[in-house]
Image (cartoon, rainbow, N blue to C red; front, side, top):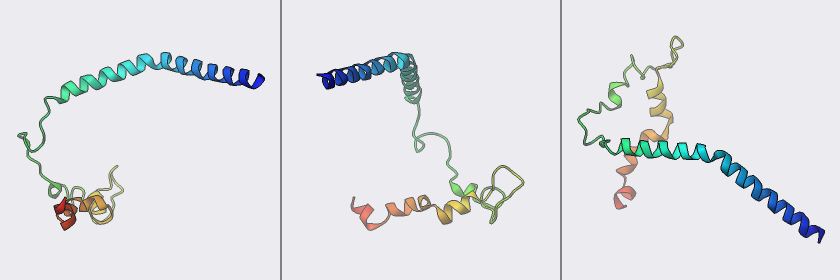
Amino acid sequence: MINNLKRTKASFLNAAKTVFISTRFAPLLFAASALVMANANAESNYQLPQYDDKIHEGVASCANSVCHGKATATNTTNVQLNEYRIWLMHDTHSLAYKVLLNDKSKAM
């Protein structure tokens, strides 16, 4: 009997916590969902890059030595200016497009 009362009290306290947390954060959740809906409406006018009038320069425009393609890091600015070389040599994401051209990807 005592164990049943302890379990009942524990389940009641858990339910009370859930209700308290739910009502406490309800305005926040409502505001967040309103922002998501507003953003969804704003993005409905968004065009995919291949259909808009902007020109994609690709990485070549920023991979030179005066932008992000330096051989060594620079300590005089808040960016090291060697990010392209790090991405190319150490980040497997640089190979992502090549993966699309292999036989396994073509078979998919």
